Amino acid sequence: MSSGSFAYHYAASGRTSMEPMRETIGWPSLAHADERLQKLAEVPKHRPDWAQDLLQIARAAYLVDKLSLRDRSLDGWTRRLDLSVEVINPDAWSPSTLQLLTRLLETLSADSWVITVRPGAQRWPQQARTTYTDIEEIALFSGGLDSTAWAAERADVADGPLLLVSYFEPQWSRKQDQALTVITSSARRDIAQLKASQQVRLRRKLEASARTRGLLYLATAIYLAAAHEVSQVAVPENGQLAINPPLTAARVAACSTKSVHPGTLHLLNSLIRALGGAVTVVNPYLHLTKGQVCQRALSAGLSPTTLTQATVSCGHPPRDRPNARHYHCGHCYPCLVRHSGLLAALGADSTPYKTDVWLLGDRADGAVDRRALQRWLSNPFSVRDLTTDTPLPGDVDPGPLLDVVERGRAEFRRMFTRHGCPITPAGMRAPSAGMSRG
Image (tube, rainbow, N blue to C red):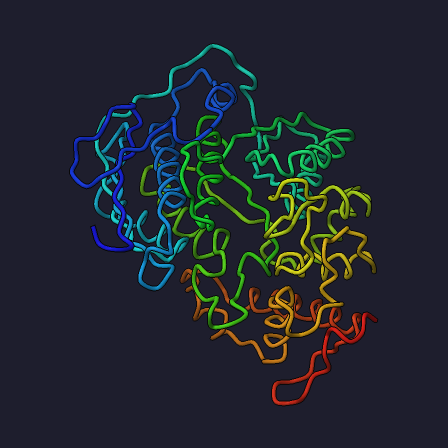
């Protein structure tokens, strides 16, 4: 097998694959909470096979993503991933449907994927241990600012049960619980939560990036929505990070996460429809900046203390390391987005960041994202910049998306000005961000 090429067979049945040049992986490799998942999906009616098959494929893709090291590829990033998966109904996965799946995975990970399906998976059995049979609404809940704001908004709606789908992260589980406790304490409806693990159980070196993780979250929520005949799954993400335009040429495509990009959700929804499903994945915060999301959270009754102390937004949480005391590094791009949004909504940000990025010199390693953001803000942003990196669906008007990016850029500029480093147009000399805090 050539460098950067990997081949796997995901055996939902637990059988060992006899295919040459394939490593067999399966359900024991991923520490998922199927018992809890099935309890929440326990409904009297038949659960659609397509939704279980989509979840199995998402699990397999995530495992492949984590097991295939990018540093083995020639460019240190792009891999060829060959994957076969046992499903319940292989006939539903026509060549055109598999092509949609391939496009979706390639958009997420920027790899070359070859996906095949084969029979062998069995329907998950009914367990007669029902938790909810009348779930009315489903949303993803990470414990970040955006998902916390959306959960708070929807908790105030007097309706049937709201199900929040979360993936367990031991490093910041306490923070997630803290945010949810605040929300449920004043909720006008029942709130259920699914915490499933994304931990890979295999003892081997794992790939640090995980671009398919978002699909694993969504496929879990889609399975539960299909079981309960819920028409939508909400994945709340502010427009700045949903579009996630690359700050530099080195961050194009999947080098900047695209899990909630309008193009990604369009491919996912097209795949669901091709499989015969009636679930639609939506982003209710697509046209809001981070500051506007924070303001919505305040309007939903969350306190500034909850926003700053009980939510986690960091792209590289320091608590990934043993004995770390901080949940936010303070210098990554998501931390900078968070900081700009909280400043816009609150006028201050008391988040305990591990590093004060505004005290770092321009050449410091921790200032990489601040420097990239500063250069990006000094240049104009156009519709071409909006669409060159990741194309938009044909039915999506780029105007409102360009508008939310520009409003987000205004929040960024105010943040830089506050810290004594106003943004100057390209070609003019800008003062060092490490010289003044403001």
